Image (cartoon, rainbow, N blue to C red; front, side):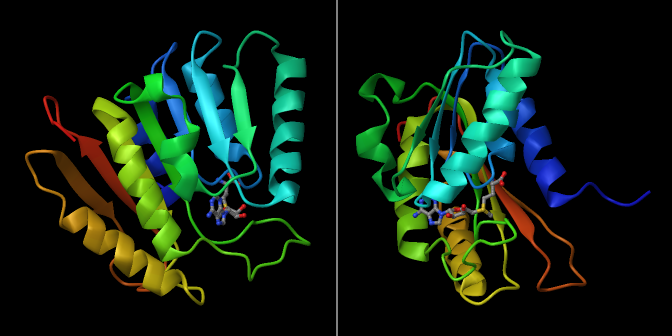
Length: 201
Ligand SMILES: C[S@@+](CC[C@H](N)C(=O)[O-])C[C@H]1O[C@@H](n2cnc3c(N)ncnc32)[C@H](O)[C@@H]1O
């Protein structure tokens, strides 16, 4: 049967914590697959913000959301897509979202589209700033998932930085886990961080 893929695992952890009416953030919109997943889970009373630095990514995501809205007009939450680095998350997401967000998804690396420039990748410094901002935005019991790609140039350094960040979080404030195939060191893997109830972050 095999284990669940890393993307399915990230979705499962998120779906367990993001209910209809909830708030969520896609930190790396890309083609919008995760954005659409979040918008469905949050539903029409919820809300989603999405970040990407490439206009091409936001166009792909807008088209994906448009098609989904055509099929089921009332099924998705409002989605605000921003052409901004996720490093600006703390200043960009409305102040009143602080401490209320159920899920923040990161899917790091490059835009997985045929003609995309694969040298445009997420960078450790911005990613770590965004992870810190995401943790502050989470509600107690909310979750951050990060899909990491140690197999491409730069991805290994970023994965190590995210692992170190998650491992060093005080356990009274957040719990962090890793989901990883152990026999293939270059295979993508997931880190998830759940904010503890009562944590003062
Ligand atoms: C692996 S893709 C995301 C895949 C996406 N979740 C999907 O469902 O298709 C990574 C994305 O991160 C974007 N990215 C790179 N640096 C970024 C940054 N500083 N802030 C936000 N997005 C960034 C890239 O442009 C790319 O589209």
